[in-house]
Amino acid sequence: MSFTAKLFEILSFGAGNTTERNLKFSFTITNIFTVLAGFFLLLFDILSILAHNYFHALVVFITLVLLLSNFILLHRTRNYRLSNRFLMTLTTVVYTYFIVSGGVDKNYGYLWVFSYPVISMFLFGTRKGTILSLIFMLIMAIAIFVPLPFARIEYAFPITVRIFSIYFFILILTFAYLYLSEQLFQDVKQNAQEAQTEVKSKDEFLSKLSHQIRTPLNNIMALSEYLAATRLDENQKDLVESLLASTHNLVNVVNSIVKVSIPGIEEKTTQTTFELISTLRSVIRLFEQQHASDLQITLTVDRQLQQLNVVGDPIRLKQIFLNLIDNILKFKRSTGNKIELRLEVIKENINQIELSFEIHFNFELPAINLTEERWLLSDNMLTTLNIINSNFDILIAKRLIELAGSRIFAFKSDNMTTLEFSLKFKKSETAIRPAPTAKSTQLISSPVSQPKVELKDANVLLVEDNLINQKIVLLSLKPIVGNIDVANNGKEALDLFVNKKYDIILMDIQMPIMDGLTATRKIRELEASTNTHVPIIAITANALAGDKEICLAAGMNEYISKPFQIETLIQKIKELLEESSN
Image (cartoon, rainbow, N blue to C red; front, top):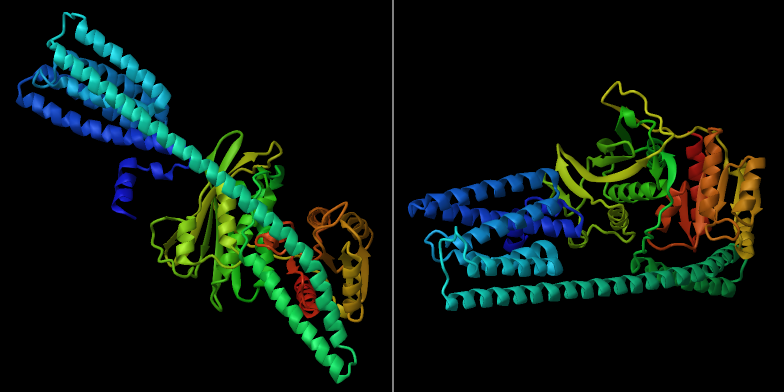
């Protein structure tokens, strides 16, 4: 941090922790003005005493006390608007007194008034500040030209002309500076919005292009591998191997699209009532299933939160934790990895609750020399420290948190690294709030056990609208699985799911009538009443950064992007069948 930035942070007195731009600016300006004014008032109070001008010293002292009182009130209430009004009123009264009294030596008190336009415009903006400055200019004219019985000084005409000329010059100069600064900010803001729109258009184009290429490319790869496994002569075998090599090269080119695109995040979210802790348990269960041998995850919450129903977007909440934990696990140790999720209530009223979320883990993110001081994870910091991987997990989570009006911090304490952020939720009218009997409890999720099913006996549901894709998957899996049913969209999949028991579901995402994400959510809702859990694998051409997390957040267990090797799919099916039986 530069010296200027550090000095500004000191003078802002905590304004850097404020997310609202206008509030941060006004709060900082008010603090700086209070500090500078307090310094000069103290200095002139001492000079007044030394000059034996005790009445003036008393007035300055009272002003200093009022200034400090306003400063304390501001930091307690954070009501900078009320504080600014009080400061401007106090400034107007005191500056008027300085004009009629002449100041410490009864000659140069008017010099204070030249700061009035600067103070008023920085505190209230160009429009209101200009009006206040002109009003004070009228007050000065009255104080100088109208004989007042309590006035202690008379100004010569040349001095009066200089006072009003310099005052008006400073007024115009301050107005021009702030007006041009505001215009520059608006131009920058507009350019940033245009750039965001352009980036979003680029991402949408890449997403569509990637999807359109991946589906036929997956068919070429699958058919080439199937053809390579048949009886071929040497010449045919050589041609097929060349075809496979070229296909794999093309796959690498298509995959590189992911590395140059960070998806735009929609601001609109679905607001629904959900059970907060149950949602987090489902996230923990997913990672426990994937890393059962080398990872322990615990959830520590206030007991009053255990059955709390809130109104918000559970999918977005899952996305945040999936991205963060997935990024953390990329740097885990071989054994003894521990992750603890902690939830605490920050603020609560009748309609809303604000919660603190902390993720503690006993291994370190690379290149970050964290201390007990909280570090704000900014884009520049993440880029400089080079911890953004090709999937951009932590950057996506950071943007989701910021979109919710919060920020994410990192720090280290007791050999544990911590990521911390807060989120606000509306309370549900149907919330169940048991009486608190203990400060907190630890909850460890456990997956639902199912009878063990072998691959050769598995009952599989394939949900895919593309007929060629259906044929290829059926051609590849029929010889090694017990039975495969096909649904052409999510609606057909739900109908089959209700009437027949399946051991695993292979789900496409983009389908007519009902897409794969909606179908998955409805399947999970149906399972909630039966205490069952059927593994779902997303098989999709949606392969840009963030698509995996969206699928997992919807309730899917695994994710495979097209094009893929059939051996990869078979291995995933085996692993999920094994996990569902544990």
